Image (cartoon, rainbow, N blue to C red):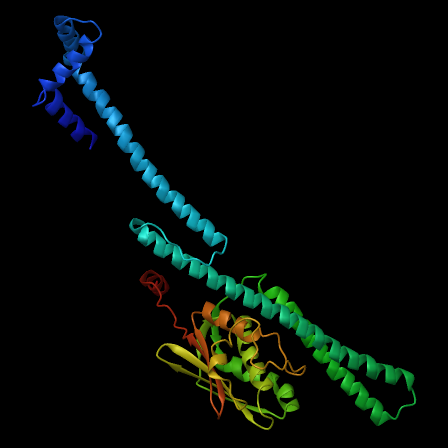
Length: 367
């Protein structure tokens, strides 16, 4: 633009159609200061004609700086407006981001960023509130069995001649309350540990058939105390590449969840089968229906389906959340479904397949 303007001045004022008017105007101006016509003409030639290139260059630089100033000022205004909107986002302003029409793509991205940050803030606030509520609930649940333990032990201490049957009964109740207290303390540790460590997998070929059967056998005492049974139906040699300890924790959490919410006298069915490159594991129990809206939140941290906080079944709401994280780290999925007949948790894990040996290794073995 500067070059175009300088070119126009050169051709119009100096060498163009205004070449007579411009010199006459400049000479008349100089003659006002007492110069003769010849002196003014000579001075005009010395100043303008002999230094034409210098004037062209100076004019170009001046015009370039002027245009540059206006361009930078516009860009600076854009940056200032963007900065103001970013400041509004940081200050959690409710007003939407509104920039000049030329900056509409940036405006849309800033609005999207604002919504994303808002959603994350709400999610973090809700998670923290759930955590705080659960700490309060667990503190109350800790107090309940502890009070019972102290009461029964006090009676045993104050009545040394108590009948054997009654003494045995009180000792058994105190033991149950102590075990429950231990579970709640473990849940407190689970809450503090959940966000303080990253889960690192140590994968190896793992037979899920044996793991699920062993899990059911180890849970016999707990199942029996709840008047429940379990059955395991699996295909043979269901191999996955997984971390034994972590996957055992997943299935133990799912079984404990099924035990906690099953009707007495019912059976918990554990199944596993292969299909389309996946190993599908299911835990099915008969209990109260989980509403559809709650199924969407069941794998969130600190979420519990029952809001009653029963001291017998109340957990920290971390088991299913941790299970989901572990399963997804293995490249699998976990989901829940519930109807009037049963509640089912389904885990899908990639089936283990041995990688074919490189040709070089095969040749080395043959040699």
